[in-house]
Image (cartoon, one colour):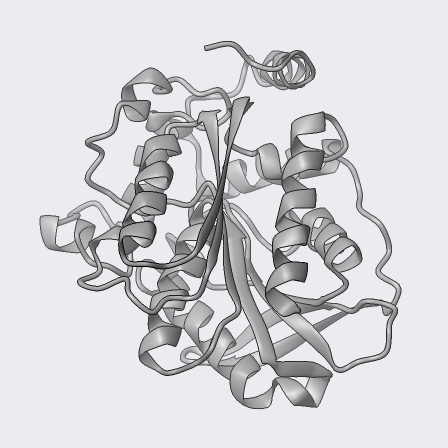
Length: 314
C-alpha cells in the first residue's frame, strides 16, 4: 500500500504522537472521543459561513436532538444537506466535523444541518438510525421554518455517517420523500466482511479492523447476532430493494478497510438503475474527508461533494 506523500507525512506525525496510546480495545469511549477531538483540532478550522452558524434542537424519539445549522450568505430559501458525522457511531460529534460542514456550506451554497445523533454505548443500535430519520422527516415537513427549500433536500455523511445517509435514503424512498442526493463518503454498507480490503487494509492506516470491531461491539452490543448484522438498518446493502433511491455520489479510498463494500454498493445501486457518480481516491485512507487542510486529495474530495450537491439542487 503506497500513500500519497502529503497524506503519508501527516499520518506519520499522527502515529508518532500516539505511539504510547493503549490499543483501541483497551480504551474507554471517552478516551477515544478525546483523541478524535484532538485529531479534529490538529486538522484545523474551516471558513465562516456567510449566513452564520446556529446550534439548535429538533424533536426526536427519545428527546431533543442537538443540531447545528450552517447558512450560506445568499438569500433563501436554501437547498439543504442533512449531514451525519462519522466516528463509528461512538466517537464523532458536531465539533469533529464542523470544518467539513463549513466547507460544504461555502462551496455548495446550501444550508447544512448537522445532526448530533445519539451515540453508543450509551445508546446502541438502532438509536442513531432513529435520530437520523427523525431529522430527515423534520426537515422535509418543517424545514421551511428555518429557511429550507423543502423541495431540495439531500442526505450525506462519512463512514458511519455515510451508513446513516444510505439508510435514511432507503427510508425516505419508502416514505415518498423526494431526496435529491445521497452523498456517501466511504460509507459502511455491508457487515458481511467478505471483501479483500478487510485483509489488505487490516492495519489501516487510521482505521483498522481492530477499531471497527471495537465500534461494532459498542454499537451492536457484545451479543451481536447474524440477524442484527444483516439488518438493512445496519447493512443497507442487505435491503431487499434499491430501486427508486435518490441519485448518489459515493467516494471510496484505496487504503481503507471499507473500500470494497463501498465499491460493491456502487454496483448494487447501478444494477437497481440508481444514478451514481463514484470516485476512488488512490493512495488515500479513511478519514480523508477531514484532511482538507493537510492534503490535496481531501481538497478534491470536498470539491467533488460540493459539485455533486450543486448539480443535484439545480
